[in-house]
Image 1 (cartoon, rainbow, N blue to C red):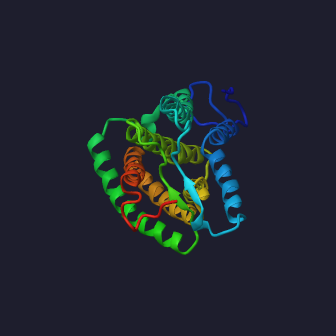
Image 2 (image 1 turned 90 degrees about the horizontal axis):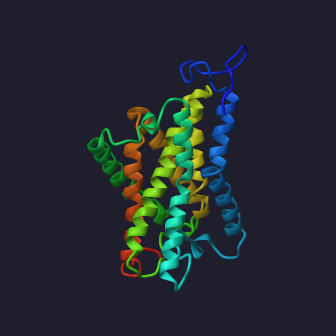
Image 3 (image 1 turned 30 degrees about the horizontal axis):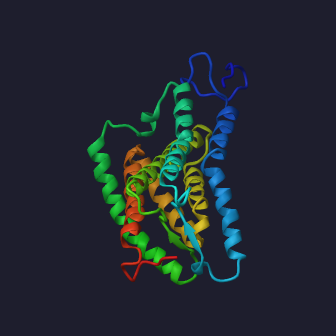
Length: 270
């Protein structure tokens, strides 16, 4: 959608030669992208959380399952559903790429490209190591205090495609969240004239909101992670390292749980 630039139109010089989007268009576009993706997930997580806290029993006695079978007992159909879910979850990222292209930009504008693979990988690995170790300790502590559900990262059947699908799911989560919640959202909020502090809180609270289904701990832990990720994005100008870090964190959680559940005493299971 485009509007002719004219008197009284809030637009951004250089975005479109002759035709420029108004602030209203950019705002509505941003809200629609969120409504089709992680904003809707935040509302869903809130409803789920209300259901959990109003259910008899403590939160830690309830489970939040992340990757479950979509067709129990039918592995090929299950695989089809798993791949379909991963692919369709990335459609909002394609929509963001389309909107950036309309501006004469692309995902490279957000630092999501292959121009700096080794720095992205190195930084991402360091971030994952720091956040992963503290994140596990935080989860165990808040669950023990009764502020979090027992998180079950995966409950897939023991089939040949289990771990490849878990890795793909981790990559999908990382790309969707970091491109939209950090790169795209911050770009739009900057274009709309929001203060950096306001944009930081909006991104961080959004990240926390769609993890609320895990409990208070899931919300707080991811809000703090959101603050760190926004700060790093402002410093580096790239979501690449954040996608790497998020991918490694989720791969560690999904695959690690699949390998260790029921075999070590410190890992809670449903």
